[in-house]
Length: 346
Image (cartoon, rainbow, N blue to C red; front, side, top):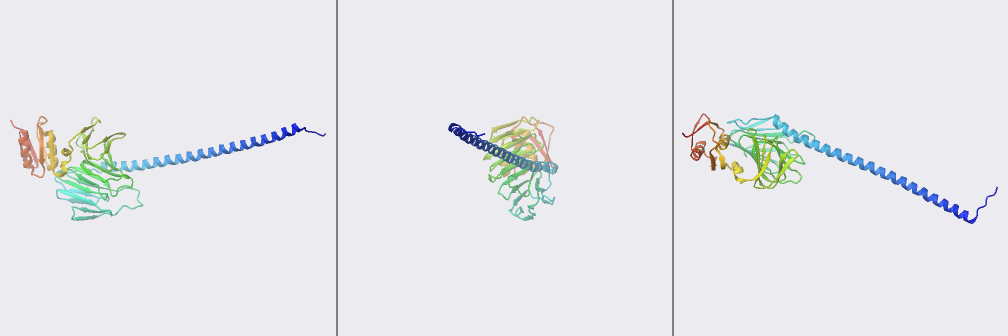
C-alpha cells in the first residue's frame, strides 16, 4: 500500500519532529536543572551542618574551659588566713611562700616568673600536645597585698584577703582570670583575645581597659568600677555595658543589679595604700580596717549611725589610724591580742 503525502503534510510532519525535539531538549534541561539544584541544596545543607557542628563544638570547648576555671577555683579554695604568708601555688602544687608585706610577680614570655625581683621561678611551659589547661594561683592573706604582671603586659593588684586563679598561659582566643576578693586591673588591649574576669557569680569582659572588681565571698554584693575604656558585666545573658566613672553593683541576695556614677578614686586608691570615704558608715570602715591590718574588730554595738568622710593613709600604724577614726566618730578603742575593741563614749 502506497501512502502519499501532500506538501502540507510534509511540512506538518517536519514541524512536529522539530517541536518534539525541542520539547525533549527542554525536558533534559529541566531535569539537569533539578539535579543541579538538588546537589546544591545537599551541598549547602552539609556545609551549614558542618558549620553549626563546628560552632557548637567551639562554644562547648570554650564554655567547658571557662567553666573549668570557675569550678577549679571554687573547688581549690585557699582561705587567706590573717598573719600567714602570701602563697604562690603553681599548677603542679609547688608552693612558694612570701613573708613580706607585698609579693610582686612578673611573668616572662618563656614561662619564667620573677618574684619580688629577687627570686626567679622556672615553670615548664605547657606542652602543645596537652589539651588540658593548667592553672596557677596567688593567695593573699589579710594585712598584705600582691601584684601580678602577665606576659601580655596586663597587670593586676590583689587586695588583702584575696585570691587570683589564672592559666599558666592564656588561650589563643581569650584571657581569663578568676578573682575571689578585690583586684584592680590594667588590661593590655588585644582585639583578638578578650579579657574575662570571673567571680563565680558575674563575669566582666573587656578588650583593654582599667577597672576595679570587689567580690569578697563574705560580702553580699559585688562591685565593678570602671576607670577607663569599656566593659560588659553581668550574669548569664543579662549583661550591662559600663562606662568610665561608673560603678556596677550586683546583690547576691536579691540578684538585682544597678549602675551609678561614682568618684573612681574612692574605690581604687587602696592599691596605693590609701582608703578614702565619703559618708561611709563606721561599720563598713572597720571592716576595711580588719582586712588591711589583719586584726579582728570586737564590739557589741552597731555604728551604722556614724558616718566617716576623709582619707586614711594605710601605711601608718594601726594605732595612728584608729586614733584618727576615734576622733572622727567620737568612739573609744583598745588594741590588744591582735584585736580592736571599740565602744561608744558614754
